[in-house]
Amino acid sequence: MITAVLIDDDKHLRKGLKALLERYTNEINIIGEAESVKTGIALLEKTQPQVIFLDIHLSDGTGFDILEKMANSKGKTTSHIVFITAHEQYAVKAFKFSALDFILKPVDPEELQNTIIKIKEVSGKANSFEHIDLLLENIRKKVDNFKRIALSTSDGIHLFEVSDIIRCEAKVNYTEFFIKNHKPVLISRTLKEYEEILTEHGFERIHQSHLINLSYLKSYIKTDGGYVIMADNSTIPIAQSKKEKLQELIKAL
Image (cartoon, rainbow, N blue to C red; front, side, top):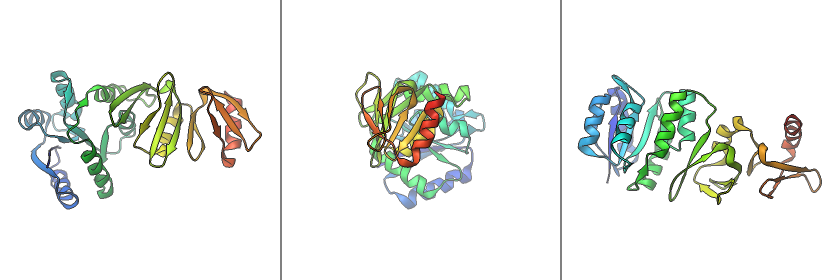
């Protein structure tokens, strides 16, 4: 049984989330609830749960105040944090760059079920606070131009400079990152998810399976159906529908 707590100042949301968890899984046991930063910190110190469902906006502060308290008192935590948030664009993007899970209000049952699957996958594993620190850094800035990204792999969380990512390749429901001076990194998220957050950083999806960083594009070859050669000497095909836009982007470089 996975132990969890709910920290949210909306008692109706807490009640609804508990009901949904009971409907979709019998493996998560809610062992406590809190409605503020003060009571949330006390609850965590008392229960040390495996999962924390944490609202951003609380009656006496924010969920980030709780995280900062946790980060200052420990180097690692076995708690898997799932944020509960309204649809605030900069915050949602910050979560994605930080490899942290979140649920949007109102809670969507399908989204919650996907989150439950992730919780089961990481249950019992120790988490570094590095990616939480990255989230706090990005949230404080309230800007979209994030410089670093956290990638969650089977062996832990790894932080990279966005500018060091050469390209990304789809592997069914996984994405493989090819990074400057680093071995490839395989992530259990789709290429579409990364396309959504990296396009504004100079990345372009030139094929169904390939997202490239235009800064590392070395050559554009028009023969043999059309392909590009990247700085790592990889050759990437170009979809017919992407050729015109890619040529326009190259001219603008």
